[in-house]
Image (cartoon, rainbow, N blue to C red; front, side, top):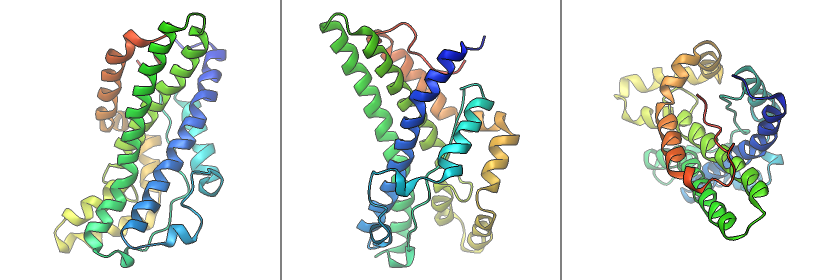
Length: 237
């Protein structure tokens, strides 16, 4: 049964800023990690900031997430910020630097997911101690639940070894030398392989996101006793 249209739109309003912040943090992490590895390109381009404006790509950050949201009736959405430019040739150690920079966004999203889960529990404890604020706390917890879910999606989707996703950079260094350049040629297609996967093979996407789904199930079981409201769970059935 589909949720009422009011609740559906309310969830969209709550989820969109969480998604945008998570995407911005993901790209910031790439730029910061690159700086630590010897490449200051992101710093010079003004991308080492959590201000969302320099990171927003109209299609990836706003339009595509909205389309996926409404097409899936709120069960799934995905997006991306404007990719931070890096110069791997400036890394002090190319292989080590590329793996660290490529992993930084995924690690950041996992950390954000854990932080949202912790904040959910903290607010639940606050609601127990301060009567009369359950409604406001419940809304905040619903937003944090989206924070857990969306960051899990971003982390485990980006780690997939499909160019140009972050996981493709890691797999590149694990391949035999004679396969590396052939594999990297797929990057010339840009986001087309990712869009084909998401739009034409939603069942495969759900299977590939099994770690995110299991992580969300674990969060639901763990966090339920701390929920201030009765309608906080946004986990897709």
